[in-house]
Image 1: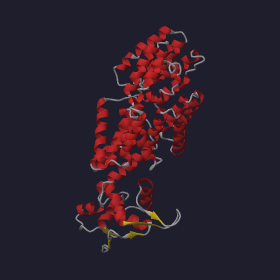
Image 2: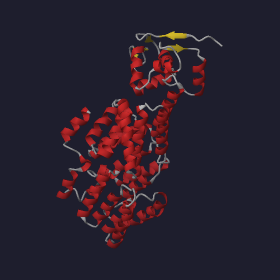
Image 3: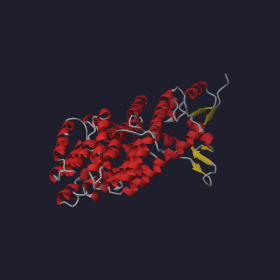
Length: 444
């Protein structure tokens, strides 16, 4: 066996190439470059963007400690001396490298955690309706591998909150688990990008602190422009502010890179609908389906876009056809029924509309968070504005996805001029004073 070569570094040592930086971290140069671009690994450049690079050992060590890991401590765990050693020919390190890609930790346990988080982040960019459960399991395994990784706990929070929102299914136990995971993540590293993203999602969906969520999302996107959970969350935040052009621009830029990300593509479809262009929304929905993205949320958007305000009776048959296949696949979702009930009412088929409204009562006993919005649609069609506003309040309180769009929802056009709606709208999001909340949110 060849004798191991030992390289010793002082804290002031300088690493003068990507190869030496990667060697110090125990990863490939390509991985080191990715950490530089995505996680702010402290590497400096000489001259232009293609110039020579260098890094100082003490700065790299500080970066590692900020992410919850120490090469010195991990070496000590393997029985190495307290002095940091880099072995160029080491049988133990070679065996680990042969089995899995090298990551910036000196034990296979921490390597596994980082690998799982990298896979989970990649899955966000190709997310389908069935992937959120798989992503949650990856984060759970990462926690089991390293219970001190803030990113893993934050990922659990994001997956639980986003999953409940886009599936229109939420429970108190799920929300409690999301908050618990966020507390754990915050205690470990409150400045971590994933932790700030998780905090933003909790503020957006559970706390209805939309100003605070906006600040957190902006802080994350300032560092990581292509982090899917932050992009989708910020787009929803733009919608709550009525800034549909900003939401569309952000999503268009992201989906140009990651066209298989279901949440971002679906929110793009919703933005088209909220902007009042139902034809463009349906065209984009068809494109999204051809890309293999499907699900009840896409059907719900399609149902809304089918409504023809000039001739609602013409919309009845397509909606009936959609609902005929809908319950088999998505029995917990009610919005297509609400859209049909609205069309029945506006077309003068009041008894059919009341039958739909009565059938939605069964959903209320379940976990469907969009049922109140569906009831509001039918009530609107029946010109029962008092009931419509009541159900909109309930939808906002329940945290449904649709409640984020009430300020610009085309279906609310007939309500927005009424004093009752304007009074209700002041409480949407349960926001405190705009200036006060924005200041506190940005500081925190």
